Image (cartoon, rainbow, N blue to C red; front, side, top):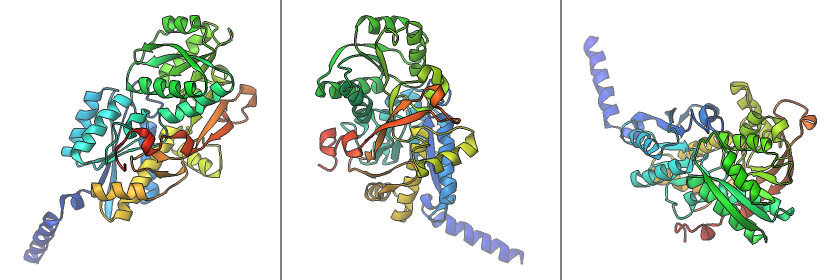
Length: 398
């Protein structure tokens, strides 16, 4: 009997050893983002929870293999982000990395993924370069980008009469791209950019920058930043009486997480663009309510977008019948996106195109229940919000 058991064990081991490494390891997804700094609420651990939710809904396995989700904090440092991603790819057999808050980190990991022929799906980072001049065959961009924010918030405010702009810009790739894309769209609508100032990430004192913006006399002060930098800018602007003085603040990347952190009293009247709002329709409410049950909060477009990115990746693996990078990337571009986050399509350059929404933050008196923060002003159609492949500067598909 013992000899039979031993023989069976040896046979099982030999069969496992003969399988390709990918078949032995399951499917592993990495959530790489800021979990302790300025963007910790913007994405952070909540994006990890969104990924887990997607995996659970998918059934926990794909092609008979267990799905695993790992997570790490890149601390907004490109070198650290690349180091983690390289270890994940080379040692820990991670198949796909997503979320990737912070454009400088996302661009660096995007390039590494190209070199190593691995899929990345950027959700949290904004720069439109990811599917523009920095595009690559295995890279994707979900949720939003700087072009879409420029068309949404920038276009709406310029058309409403905000013809002169001054930018307070985060001093790294994301800020530069957001200022450029919004500025270009403002100019195309007949507006003028009268000046800008660049501000280090995670600044605590915005007073000198706000004074420059105030003295510019611009009608609109564009906050080309995000996370705690945006909320701190708005708080300190109130101390200077900037809005009371007639200038308007435009939070160019302002999400539900920051509105919640700031509170309606301070955030009321702000105009912003998001690709998702939990109370917009039945499908968004379904996603929002499931997320709330596991986290005690509603998701913003980054967290909901991470859910969608993971779900879409798993659908592509299933449709391809393999987790081979080339085959899965091909399926990601063929399959429509249809989930509780959005309904859209993926272009040849990896850009996921879907509608976005222009919202105004409610007054405290208008909010009727917890997390009831937005009223919808208009829809920004996906084909208007995002660059086409030809417009993007990407050579893939040309």
